[in-house]
Amino acid sequence: MSCSVCAEPVVTQQKDNTVSSPVVTHLEEAQNQHVTKVPLNEDKLWLPRRYQKYHLPLLRAAKVALAQPRCYEIKRGSLDLRQSEPKHAIYRFLCKQASGKTYSEVIDGVTFQSLVPRPSSEIVCYELLMAQVKMMKQVRWLNDTALTAGDGEPERYEWQFDSVAVDGQPLKYSALCQLNSEAIAELKIMPRRE
Image 1 (cartoon, rainbow, N blue to C red):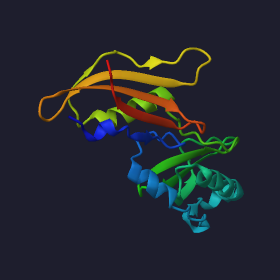
Image 2 (cartoon, one colour; image 1 turned 90 degrees about the horizontal axis):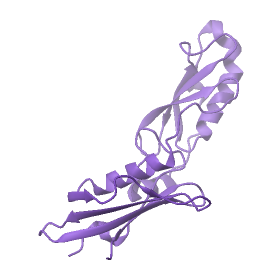
Image 3 (cartoon, one colour; image 1 turned 90 degrees about the vertical axis):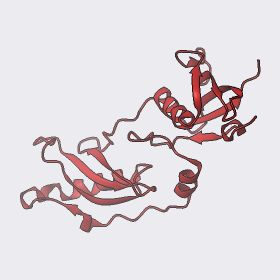
């Protein structure tokens, strides 16, 4: 008996390692390849009158935000008055992703680097795996934690698990997640042979 998962699907997590949902389906991945970034519209940026001295740094921060892999359009942006200090500005932008969802991109006004944390590759791999097995029946994990590569080997994580087909047939799987040459996590689920 076979199932759709057995065909060795490759699930890819985007370079941005999104925090809200790092799982990217094949459809979303295809859509992302055809979405072009919307040029920066300065009318979407706002500063209170007394903070106009931050106008040029705000523009620079907006360009940095738009350069982030998952930010396809800036819907609005401003100086984050709650987090900023007199000598350390913080800028917050509402970015639209290729999927149409929005998220907050936060840029440090001194280093002009993104302050949005990225999850570790092990967490990303685990979340990719959980997204793929959530519809499987009676999943039983054979190892408590991911088996990792040894020192000096490319980063990769491996899981062994069993499941049950719709007709009750036992199914045995191996899942392998590794980072490709662009440091993007790829997950393969394959039938396990014993």
